[in-house]
Length: 239
Image 1 (cartoon, rainbow, N blue to C red):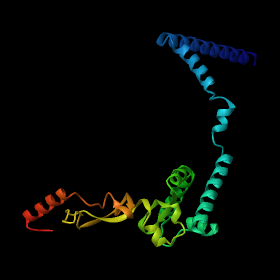
Image 2: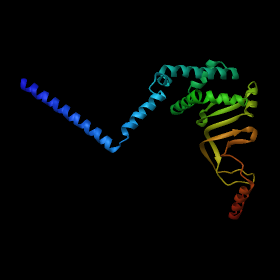
Image 3: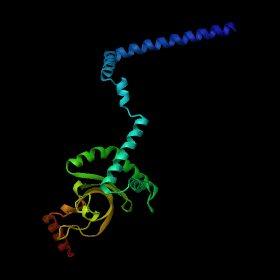
């Protein structure tokens, strides 16, 4: 027994000696490889402390689960209350509209819509609404289940009492959904002709300017239309 204890003691001493040797060699290698490494590490530590990264104040800026929950509830409540006030729709009905999966909507699309709505409500809306109000507008998130997309709609604040048909004419829409777009030659009217393709792309709608699905549906310059017509005439196809 005494022999085993002596052997273990010698082993521990040997291990300790090896660790000390490795530490000395490591420190010597660090000094040789980079004479300023230790000074850099020391100065970096001082800079970090001066920035307050290790201070309790900095740690309090990192959102905790409780703080995020409060912000999540507050942001969604403000959005629903504001939309309920502008649209004269009960808040419970609005919440049901936003969270109910409509018939025919697949689960992945439904989940993507919920995520997009929350990104808008938590990240985009607090800043976008302030900017919109400066220009006399309000912003809304919309989901287009039949077109597999969503969008942000801007409307003048002064027309919120009007019916939907009249508000639509003054909207500005930033949408991303599926739509049909012509990909044929440019005709005499400046627009592309069939054939058409189904595409899911971001686009801009401004009814007052005559923009619909811009820039994918737009009127091309007269010169380009004439070139397209000339090519077709040479082929004997016409437009």
